[in-house]
Image 1: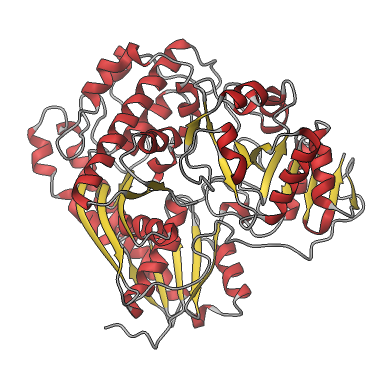
Image 2: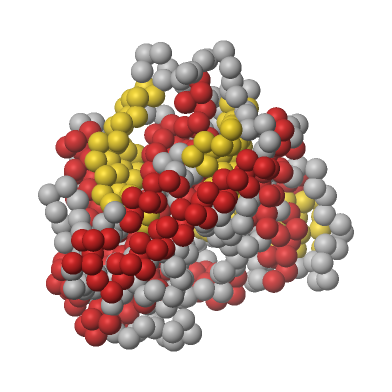
Amino acid sequence: MTTRDHRPTVLGLCSFTHDSAAALITGGSVIGMAEEERLSGIKHTRDYPDGAVEWLLTDARLTPGDVDVVAYNFAGHRYLAGIAGTPGYLMRAETRSRALQRAASFAVIHRRFRQRMKILKDTFPNGRVRCVPHHLTHGLYAFAASGFDEGAILVIDSLGETCTTSISHAEIRPDGDVRYRIIETISDPASLGYAYGAVTAHLGWRRGDEEGTVMALAALGDPARFRPLFARAIPLTRTGFALDPALFPLRVLRHGWPRVTPAFAAVTCLPRHPDEEATQVHADLAAALQERTEQVMMHLARRALDVAGTRQLCVGGGVAMNCVGIGKILASGQFDEVYVPSAPGDSGTAVGAALAAYRSATGVLPGGPLRSCYLGPAYPEFTPPAAPRPGLSARQVADPARFLAAQLAEGKIAGLFQGRLEAGPRALGNRSILASPLQSGITQRLNAAVKFREPFRPFAPVVLAGKAADYFRLSQPSPYMSIAVPVTELARELIPAVVHINGTARVQTLASEQNPFLARVLDHFAELTGVPVLINTSLNIKGKPICGTPQMAIDCLASSGLDGLMLDGGWWVSK
């Protein structure tokens, strides 16, 4: 039963898996969302999001006893369905050796789920725990944040209970409710996220963290070398795709079970050690993986168009962070607009779970800043000491936007910490590192001395929305750096630092109302240089999460090659 007169306080949680996060709806509005890693400093933490929950409740002047509904981002009872296929797996030579271990692992996950739900019930004594199917959390968040009246929703990830891919249709009804209908699903073991993560690990990077590094490496390789292999490894079907278990073995939900087979290694390369230099064979393997991923994403997008019947597409799930694949979908011209929310991965499911539970209770979606990425904590009262750390000094400047633009124009690399923390994996102007794309050698300096990461990794640009067409071939806004698009000749000539070797850039288009301070910095930088574009990368170093607190930002300045850091209130901290 639903009633619009009762507006429950709903706490959405992503917890106990990876990318822990929390979101809060109270008084009929989304109040905020925060990722625990940004507060704890532990990247991709799976711990219960204590810090995020404490901030949300304190900010709203609530206690755990005030929470009416705790919305969890998995419907854990569905893990038992993963056991059902065991007899079939036992019958096949390619899957027989893992069939029983797979079934046991799904049973263990189900048992842990029940234990974890008891923890939540004990933590929120007056709240009802509601478990939301994982793909619904991804999809409902993507659609609600898009602003579309109607949309096709494509969710692609590694695993949500037993589902890996879903296609849905959603529309806003005249009474304000959302009609959300899942049309088709693909179940494990067919998982594009599993395959991409498996090859990422084989190439020596961290699965679930460094898939973007493999995507960047792909631009240096030749996909032809392993193209036939991936056509066999990830065959297309009429409605989706499959995985060949001779190359990508049956998933077991436990550590220590390889995700590629010896046969895969025999026809590609030996597993690369993280400290080993990446060579051409690694780049070629990455290129073939990326090419096949794009083909599968395109195939699924066409399927979504066919079955949902609308030319507005929302994409969610971890694979939605493959900005090159998203760019290919957009460039195909099949859709009028392609929308990826700022937090398409699992952290965003905290918002999606809260939305689903609130809608279930009231019949409508809540209000609030769903279309904004700036949903986390802010620290406007923070004042740094005169010497925040040995070797650092702080002073307050009169016109911080103009001052910062001048520093950047002179070649300085600066951190920017202002306003509310972004939701999602991209720094979008509130927890950013900014630099001039006009400086010679700036990408090498950023990679080597600031970010401490691989030299082939590109840097994304932020551009004033009204000037984006001068530099990037983009047919729609890209406020969250979700789309890799071709650049213009002007960009190649003036700002090659933001152009990847494949001729694309993962651009952030910025309207002044989205982030007024950053827009002013871009305006002043354009006055000084004639170019309304800056390099924008996240305020962190490799292996660390984006800095969520002022002290984290100061520590990042002290431990990296940053020249300075602009904080709220015009506080400039420098070396």
